[in-house]
Amino acid sequence: MRRNIKLAVGNIVRRVLHIIREEDLSLTTAAIAGLNLSAASDGDDDDDGEQDEHTVLSAAAVAASARNALRPPSLQTLLEDMPESVAIPHTSSSGGDSEGKSKSADKSSRTRRLKHDVIEAVNELIQDINTCHEQIAEQAVEHIHQNEVILTLGSSKTVLEFLYAAKEKKRSFRVFVAEGAPRYQGHLLAKELVTRGLHTTLITDSAVFAIISRVNMVIVGAHAVMANGGVIVPVGLNMVALAAQKHAVPFVVLAGSHKLCPLYPHNPEVLLNELRSPSELLDFGEFSDCLDFGSSIGSPLLHVVNPAFDYVPPKLVSLFITDTGGHNPSYMYRLIADYYSADDLVVRRRVALGN
Image: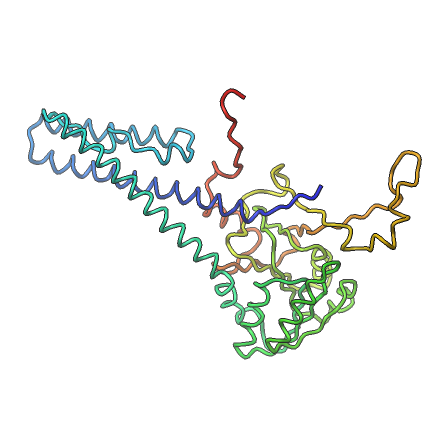
């Protein structure tokens, strides 16, 4: 059965969860800092009894925050209102109704502020995703030099913009494009490169090893970058990476930060590949006899396997270029750790009560 993997979607969901956690922590820290300042200023003016009361209040606020930090976090707990001991100081005034209204107003104000901060941060994330191609392309002139030969495979918008940006900076170079069978996405990239005025040579996938000795650098896009520095790429690129290693040619991967996945290839949640339709490889009409069930045990005479992706291990990757700069494969796990919370790495389906 064909199973589609869109790891970037899961990455963005985890980024949003991380944003919510960070904004909630920021508001909680600010609230505790405000209580501490209030307790300190009131302690200078009030008598000893009132000073002790505020000191206990501040300690209670810190304790409540610590309990929240130790509690297993979830979206539900993060979007709940703050505990009363943290949200507003306890007063001994007789105005019970007005005090209750004040507490409710403070809680509502904090919730509105949290939502506002989360929305702003999510909008920034959307903007970063929309502009990642341009931010990566701005670095092209640092990596592509005059009269070099670049090899790529298949079609990638990020690679297209990267190469075009180098050409706009007056770099003169030639691009070899492997066609990327059986979908032949390389044909589309070659056409786009020629349209934009780049010197382009289209080759078959099987010719990669024959011409790799003439290549100065391999530049490719990515489907996902794993936490160990490995990368999931269009099928055929593992062969290119092996050829590049054999001839000491740098293998450079372009990827926006939303494609950085916090999972490892061995995680059961990661499906490294996707099997596409056999019709991309052959005509069912011509091969109908081979595909019929011709044996007594009911198994077909011809099996067709058409994987969509390759996995390139980190030892074959020379450099990652993201919208935040260039990084070695060994550094990717640290970069990924800044974008995600450990509690969100595996998103589990919630089981309904009574099931």
